[in-house]
Every structure is written in C-alpha cells, then in structure tokens.
Length: 90
Image (cartoon, rainbow, N blue to C red; front, top):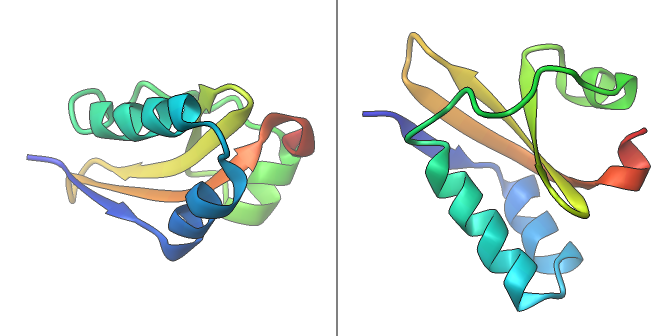
C-alpha cells in the first residue's frame, strides 16, 4: 500500500495559507485520494515549481492552490511538499 508523508512545509502552508474550511477539507480529501491514484496530478509544471522542487514532482490543482507532491513508485511513497497559490506559480 502506498504511504504518504506530509512535509513540514506543506503542513505550515496548510495552516497559514488556507482560510476557508471548505478549501481545507478539499485539500485534505485530495491528499487522501493520492493513496488510491498517485499519478492523478499533472507533470505539466511551471518553471518556478521545477526550479524549487525539481522536475520529478507533480501538481494537483485545488483552486486557488496547487498541491505539490512527488510519487516514488518503486518505494510506493508519496511526499507532499507544499501548497502554492496558483497565481504565484506562473
């Protein structure tokens, strides 16, 4: 079974950037879905995301945020790195 690790940056972003309970719950739900479909995020990344996190990450949209994560198929491990506001990513 795939394991998920939430990076400290993601936890901090979730606490400090998300002000809507609805958006908070949507983000938590999508992170849980990653265990079922770890490749559901897109690899079509803005250059700023690649520079910050590397080219192996994926983005999962949850407006107005992007959930930035990496899936290591061989280790069956998902690492959720950050929550980036969509406007700041492009």
